Every structure is written in C-alpha cells, then in structure tokens.
Image 1 (cartoon, rainbow, N blue to C red):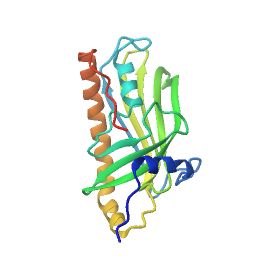
Image 2 (image 1 turned 120 degrees about the vertical axis):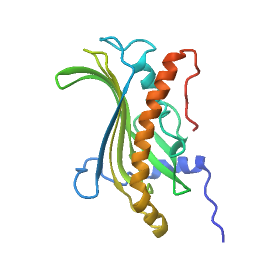
Image 3 (image 1 turned 60 degrees about the vertical axis):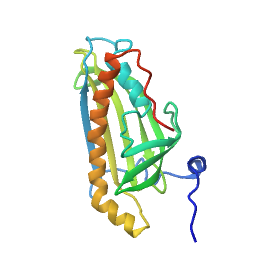
Image 4 (image 1 turned 90 degrees about the vertical axis):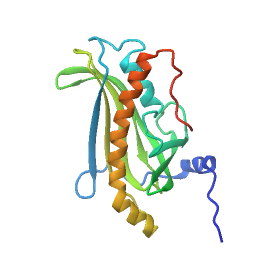
Length: 214
C-alpha cells in the first residue's frame, strides 16, 4: 500500500504542535556536536552607520529573505515572510538524490550595535532551531555585520548541530556518510552566493529584490 505524503501547507500547519528536538538551554559542546563559524567579506562601505541601499542593507535583505541558501541543497517551501520569533518554517533539503521536509522555528532576531574586540559593530540577523522530525538537532544563526570604525561588511553563519534521531536505517546510513559533507557544502555555497548576490544588487540597484520560493 502506498502512503501519500501530506502537502507542504498541511505539514507547515502541523509544525505549531512540534517541539524542538533539543534543549536550546543545554550546553551544545562535546562529542557528537559540530560547531561551525563561517564568514565572507562583502563589499565595504565608508565608516559610520550603514549606507542606505549599500552593502549592509543589501546583505540584510538577503539574510532576511533566506535568499543566500542554495536551492540545490535546501530551500524554504512554507513559512515565507520576515523572520519573527516563533515563526515556523518548512524547508526542503536534498542529498543523495532524495528530498526531505525539515521543520524549523525562528528563535531570535538580532538588530543591534555591539562591541566586538572593542570595536562597534552594527548587526542584523536571526536564527532558527530544529523541530521534532528533523534530520539534525541544533541551531543556525545567520547575520550581516558592519564594523562602524572601518566600514568592513561581513556575512556570518554560526551553526551548532548534531545528527538527529533518524528511524529509517537507510536514511540514517546515508546521513552518516554524506550529511556532514552536504552541510559543509551548504555553508560554502551560501557564502559564495551571498557575496555574488550582494555585488550584483549593488551593481544594478534597480534590480527586483531576490525572494525565495515559499
């Protein structure tokens, strides 16, 4: 007997009943946990607050819209819109020629000026946390930052993750063999796409905003 897969909008509606598949307050270090921190320089601006329509504001839009994610690896299929704490998102991940629905929930949204190494930095970003049924457990933060003293602009992804509970033995084996490789590929491509899309938007300010499907 064939089992039909619920439509994405039904899966998305069901996410409000799903809890996180990890404790956000527990220490996420030690055996089994991967801690990744990847960064990519974006076109710089003059020192001082972000320039209207400049590199930082463009990067913020791309981060807000999850536009930097390579749809060949992962894309948002439900839950579009500005990130807000508690908003559920349904992602579609691809690896080993298969597709998987991945449930996440927005945790925090950052919009602040902070000091990093004694230097003032303008930060905008957000994170999401994995829900029950996800192939992984953990949290990913994505943000765009501008050092106000020099004008340097940077895209950053910080992720803490480990393999989730995967009942299907074939999928579990596939994830053990290829999951980490795909994860690192996602980070690399995200950085390259972010750099390329930011530069393209600055070169053609009249270009329509990039939005993901979802």
